[in-house]
Image (tube, rainbow, N blue to C red; front, side):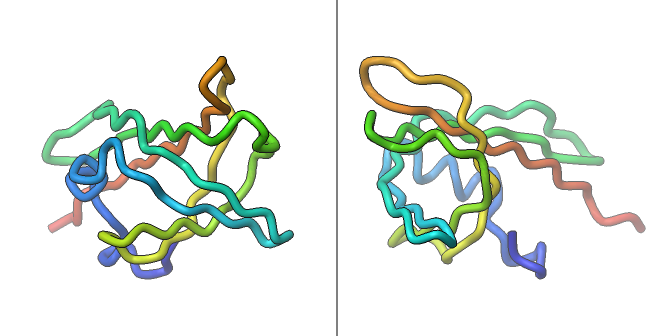
Length: 105
């Protein structure tokens, strides 16, 4: 993730990109495409926003947990920790979970 949390995409930013493709790359040179298939709001109140993203990668993608560099034409480049959570006949699925606390006054 970015060191400047204020510039990292928000829940609403990801919702706007639902069903669109991201490009992923790892430090070891692996590259693959990801389709953002789900954006799930877990908690959204005055204290925090907690949400998860589910991405689908091609079936031949190695299901390796780790930090990936994601790029998308409508968003800034970002680094996200992805965890493989399942696979089916359509692909390998990776999840990212975010918990953002509101600024304390």
